[in-house]
Amino acid sequence: MSQVKWTLDSMHSEITFKVKHLMISTVSGQFKKFDVTAETAGSDFSQPGKIDVTIDVSSIDTNNEQRDGHLKSDDFFSAANHNQITFKGTKLDVQGDEGKLHGDLTIKGITKPVALNVEAGGVVVDPYGQTKAGFTVTGKISRKEFGLTWSAVTEAGNVVVGDDIKLNAEIQLVKQAS
Image (tube, rainbow, N blue to C red; front, side, top):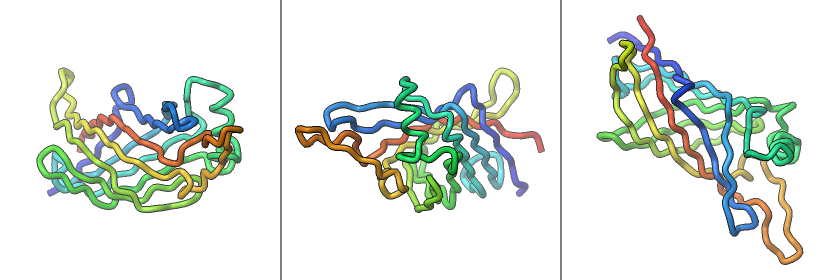
C-alpha cells in the first residue's frame, strides 16, 4: 500500500481556544495562520503514518489588540523567541467516527505528550474532484505546564487567567495526487 499525502484546506479549517477570565467568564481566541500535513497508508485514516501541525504564534487573535500583544510577549508565548507551536502526532486510535490522537505538543520550547479527542467527519469527493477528509479535534491542556505561567490576582482574590485551555480544531484535509 502506498503512502498518501494530505494537506490543509485552510479555507475550511480553524484552530480556536477558550480560557477562563476572572473565573467567571470565558475568553475565546484563534490562530489565523497554521498548517497541517498528514500521511496515511492508503486512502483513508485507518492507518495514519504521520500528522504534523505548525501554528504561527504571532497570528493569535482574541479580538483585542492589547490582549493579543500581551499574549505574544514574554509573559506568555514569547513570540519573538518561540514563534511556532508544533504538534507531532504519534498515534491515532479511531473506532468508528470517534477516537484519540496522541502526540507531542511543543509550546514555548516545552514539549509534553497530549491526547486529544477526535471526531472523524468522513472522507468525500468534492464537486471539483478533490478527495477531502474532515475532523473535529478537541482537548484541554494546562498552560502552566508549557511555561505560560503569567498570573495575576484581583484585589478581591480572583485569578485573572485560568490554567486550563480548551482547544478546538476544525480541520479539513485534501488528498494530494500521487
